[in-house]
Amino acid sequence: MKAPNQRAEPQERIRPLTSLDHPKSPFYDPEGGPIIPVARVVIERIARKGEQCNIQPDNVDDIVADLNQEEKEKDEDDTPETCIYSNWSQWSACSSSTCEKGKRMRQRMLKAQLDLSVPCPHTQDFEPCMGPGCRDDGKQTL
Image 1: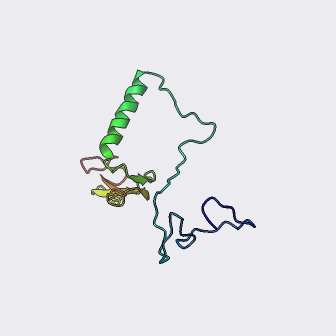
Image 2: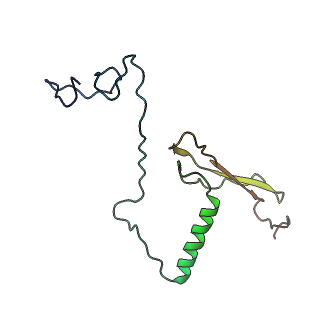
Image 3: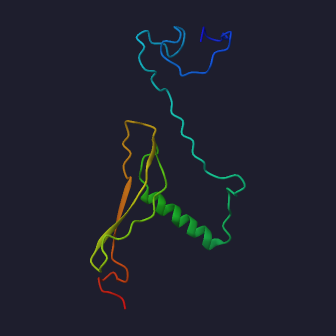
C-alpha cells in the first residue's frame, strides 16, 4: 500500500496487513504492535439449496407439538445470546449396565463467543439413566 485510495504500480500481490503499512492506515502503529480485531464474522449455513425453509404444520396437533417443543427448548436453553454453539451430540451410553442409577452425557462445542466479558457455559449436559431393560423403580423387566 502506497497511500489511501492509490493503486500500486505495478500491482502488488495480496498480503496480510501489518500495523506498519502506512501512517494514514486506520491500523497504523509506529511501534509495530499487532492489529487489534474490530469485529468478528461468524458464518453458519442454515439451509441447503433446494430445501424448504418454511414448512407449515399439517394440523392443529402439529402446531401445538411445535409450540410445546419451542417452549421446552426455550426453558432448557438459558445460554447468553452472545454464545454460539454447535448442535448437541447424541447421548452417550449409560454409565450403569445394571439397574443401578447411572448417568449419560451429551456435549456441544463453543463455536464463537461474541462478547468475551460474558461467559459461555453449558457445553456438557448430564441426565440420570439406568441400564437397558430396567424400570424407574430399579427392577429389571422380563
